[in-house]
Image (cartoon, rainbow, N blue to C red):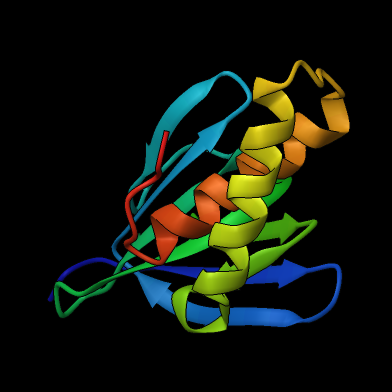
Amino acid sequence: MVATMHVEVVSAESHVLSADVTELYARSIEGEFGILPGHQPGLFALDIAPVTLKYEDGTTQRVAVHRGTLFVDQDSQIILLADIAEFEADIDVERARKRQQEMERRVAEGDDDPVLKASLAKQHVRMQVADKPVEA
């Protein structure tokens, strides 16, 4: 039997996931990291990026996370609080693609609004989680 750890994913709008996983991979504002059972307690500020969960049966699932906080307690239980957390099935790929193209056009025209750039990053992570290539 493979060791697991319990993870709870909560967004500002809903309780997204409660599951036991064998591995978790994410990106903090300082870089990529992974968590395995027995991980030391920690607190991570998450960036706009996919979070990958690996289950005991070997399957993986990705969640589009749009910033948040990930806490690992002394028993390797994980609480992930995100501004937005979306599974692939919850992503409207066509809408995300259209928004991404519009935002890329605005950036190419010289719009350097930080909110626009953050929104563009959100569309990119949605496309990554939906397994659609990010168009440059």
